[in-house]
Image (cartoon, rainbow, N blue to C red; front, side, top):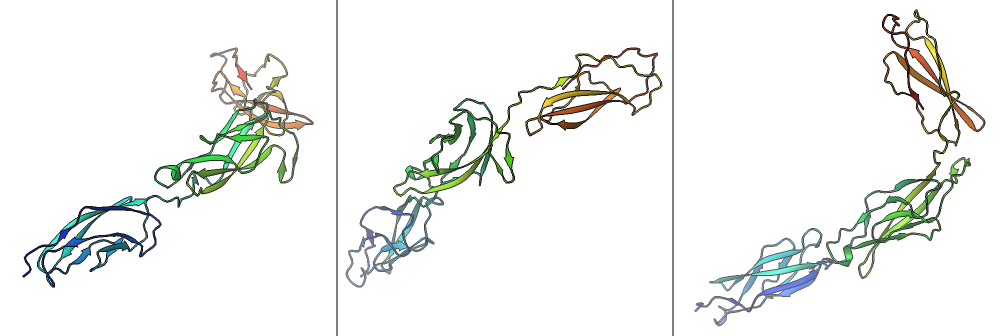
Length: 301
């Protein structure tokens, strides 16, 4: 006579590495029944996509690939049935992290610039990497240079790139090559038992310092304007010279008085190691001497 239900022998919990292969045993569930055969024959079942259980053995095995970064624990409901009665219990399976993810940089490459004559130790830029492993040493990332460098260094914890010397901008450029551009590789490495790493290229360009402000030919100009001057007429040309350091600094002449009467346009011409910026003062409104006789403009370059 089947008058005794199955009873589980205890509480069940275990852990398994996330890289466990399909078919690997996880835990064996045991259950007793005080009835005699055939009423004490127990069959087991679970409802899970990741695990399966032997109907007669109670052994739970891996059914699908696991990923702790997606799910770190499973609670399975196991059923034991003797034909008349059914018992059930929960089984907790923790997924253990394995160092299966290499660090990943937030960019595929980095480009920084550094102005010449900055002191050694000057901050240049920051590189950053993350690791998909959830926690512990597998997810902790540190940085180092891919190759030894006498010019630059990277902080192991922060990823800050700094200079190791004072650079001077070199006024020499060949086709496809510049002495002012440096290329380094930086590694991001995790601290797992079997460390994984990734590499990113970093380009650093040395920029010239703006050491030569524009110079006007005169400290002050006095320009007569005829009353019948027409709109668009050139009133005056102003010249400022700068030492040329291969690249234009983009200097602009500004009408500090914000006048609506005149407009400033400019063009550049270069002679040997200097270039001059020629600014043209253009009339924008019809003049009326009953309104003003003298106008003063403050102009800066």
